Amino acid sequence: MNMDTVEVAAQTPEVQQPYKELGLTEDEYQKIRDILGRRPTAAELALYSVMWSEHCSYKSSKVHLRNLAPNEDQARYLLAGIGANAGVIDIGQGYAVTFKIESHNHPSFVEPHQGAATGIGGIVRDILAMGARPIAVMDALRFGPADAHDTARVLPGVVSGISFYGNCLGLPNIGGELAFDPSYVGNPLVNALCVGLMRHDDLKSAVATGTGNKVVLFGSRTGPDGVGGASVLASATFGGAELGSTAGEGGGRASKRPSVQVGDPFMEKLLVECCLELYAADIIEGIQPAATAACPWTWTPSRCATRTSRPPRS
Amino acid sequence: MRIGVVTFPGSLDDTDAARAVRYAGAEPVGLWHADRDLRGVDAVVLPGGFSYGDYLRCGAIARFSPVMGELIPAAQAGLPVLGICNGFQILCEAHLLPGALTRNAGLRFIHADVRLTVTNATTPWTAGFADGQRLTVPIKNGEGAFVADEATLDELERTGRVVVRYSDGAPNGSSRDIAGIRNEAGNVVGLMPHPEHAIDALTGPSADGLGFFTSIVGALTGAGA
Image (cartoon, rainbow over all chains, first blue to last red; front, side, top):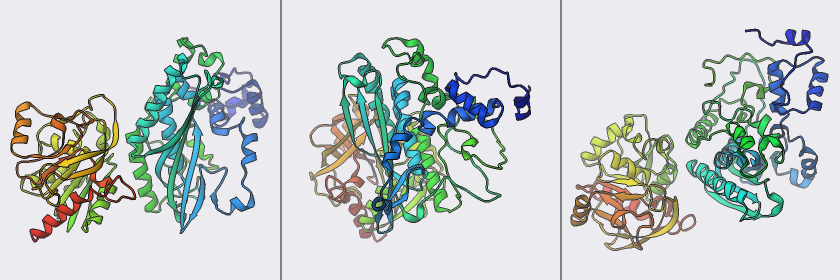
């Protein structure tokens, strides 16, 4: 098998690449070529497609998120702010809370139960990655009219997914929001929040420096479910043909279902306890949740040798 | 007084169980599922949660863990053991208690504060209660319906082995409104409700659950252990 290396890519600029299937626009693909001064290799293209997905880069939300920058008074209490996996706020006596809310709309639209369940799973890991023990979850939901056919299709699964996953992790669901409005027809919103408690000293970051550190990928097994979740699913528009916008039309939506990951809350419970033990043993330089874009590239290492002892199960 | 609290992979309520032991004036001792070692404790609590993700059946796998390899003969020899929720399920799977816990009638997970009636105050876990005493304790289960054949149920009733009953009817379809039972010798008790979540009015519906833990401390102290 011929590997698509940097040398090969530089010598074969005319090769057609599946950037559209990976969720990149024409403009974005051209930008990648401009940045690299050549076409990307297959691996580089995949890398860009996840890192530039809406889910990973928030490219369309950034302009709005900038309005939420803290003022000086608020910044005093911030131990970690925008850019970290979750905000961390001093609550006095050496304690801090960390919490974050994130959407999981597209997966929940396609596969309500698993989409919403893994939304909880992901937000819990973000809190865990700050060095805190997750202690509770919340959810904010928006659906089309209560009597709409698609609401009946999506709502029960979303509720069961959130409640099932959080329950298995031992996290109480301490509150939420629910609203029905025609503006959400075919465009449900599923937002999951997690809050964690920690001491100031527990703060972890996704930055690690120094040589000789090992990079360890650990957690649930990698299977065929969830592949393309960020690049294909999160970047697609609701109304587009890719997601099958009309109720009852199975083709588009059903074909995207494998891009929704199947959650394993039991494994995540073990992950939570394992991480907290690792933190207590003080052997972690940095930690990054890698659910979306789950490959060693999220570390963007400048020089990093990778050695997989066992390849992901396919 | 040292009371062991076992942690299985997936246990959720071990921390609260340990806190309840502390509140009752004893020292909680963490027991790891993979260790064949009870660390010389005076009693053991099997806590609630989803040991092994409820794989196959609730408690079906935990029952074979190394710590249970030590616990089962110890319980048969008289060591006091309290199984709460998933712990109750594990005790039934281990045949330390008769019957089984099955899917709730109505098939829904229930989380509620329920009223319980203590119907046997002779066990070391309930000796601090009065016969017929009412308690308010949370339940949270999806597989909390106690079942057994009619002959077993009759025998449990006849020999006073029903320890706690749901005062207002079992919300989960448990036979004969049974919320907790004991073994013949009385040292092993299984409870579906969670007393460890009702030890302090600040964080629970009442402090009624503390009685299970102060009972065992009293019983062990009285025995000069």
